[in-house]
Structures are given as C-alpha cells and as structure tokens.
Length: 122
Image (cartoon, helix red, strand yellow):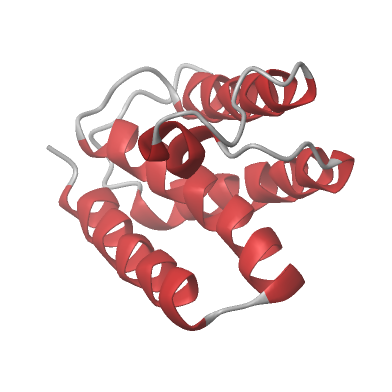
C-alpha cells in the first residue's frame, strides 16, 4: 500500500467536503472537478492499481463519461440523490477543461507520493 497516496486521498477528501459544505458558485464546481480527479487517482495509487499514466487516463475518461451522461440527460431531477452526487445532472463543457487541468495536478501528485515501490514502466 502506498501510504503517501492514501494520505493525499484523505487530505483531498477533507478539502472536497469542506468545499462542498462552504464553497459556492464556480469555485465549488471547478474546485470539485479538480479534487475528485486527484482523489480517485490517489485512491487507485494507494493500492498500486495500474501505472500512473493509466490511472490518470482512466479517471479522466470516467470524468468525461460522467459529462456525457449529463449531456444525454440520463440523470434528471427525479433521479436518486446518489446519482446527482456522483454524476451530477448539468452538462458544462468547462468541466471537461477542468478535468484536463486535474490530470496535470494528478500527475504532479503522482510524483509527490511516489515511494519508489510503484511501477515506473510508463
């Protein structure tokens, strides 16, 4: 287990919860996009799932997939609250741009939590 990545995931989760509770407007929305990518990447890294590039790519693809689900209107106001929380319900092309920024942040985080035991084959 990569403890540095796990600590990063915990700190990111706390930051995300604080942003969810006290943030508003574009700061909450854009900050949440960045934090969720780093959080999921850190969780994957903590259990050494895949290589850094694959981890980041998988998380970014999941983010874009969530935006596509929103664009298609598959989560509407009558959907379960958990779908709203995890996928959102309003498409915003800026979210995709922030996912790209998130990938850069996650790449920097990958270097920070590298403990030498992870695969550097990529």
